[in-house]
Image (cartoon, rainbow, N blue to C red; front, side, top):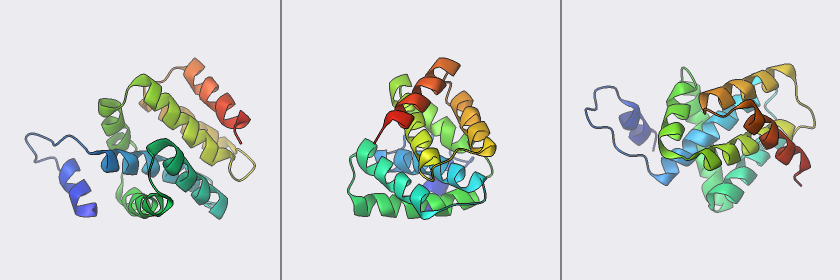
Amino acid sequence: MIERLKQFFAPDNKEPAKPDDHQLTVAATALMVQLSRVDNNEDEAELKAIVDCAVRSQEVTREEAEEILADALSHADDATSMYEFTGMINENLDQEQKQALLESIWRVAFADGRIDKYEEHLIRRMADLLHLNHREYIQARHRAEGAD
């Protein structure tokens, strides 16, 4: 799986392949993994929230979501920036799907019961990279806060 992702992101590809649903899910999950690590306190509640979001929004089984999380954890370690993930997402998801993704990212942030300033700053950057405006950013936060 990682080799397929590396081939997808390889700069020597003249005609990049359109990512499949699994690759898009890994990219979205990798953003959530980066968020879970920003406060240097990646905990089980956040990892469980990532799996729950994948099951809910991507219509995959829990086992598939856990495999995707493992792929995303591995790929997030290799990533030098969020651009490779957000670029793929921007090219393949519409505005509504990106808003749903941002809501899932907020759910991960809320999973441990608190939002620290680093998490909030990173989510703002992700929203900007996903071309979501401030209203969409706030709406996603409110929907995530009101969930569950």
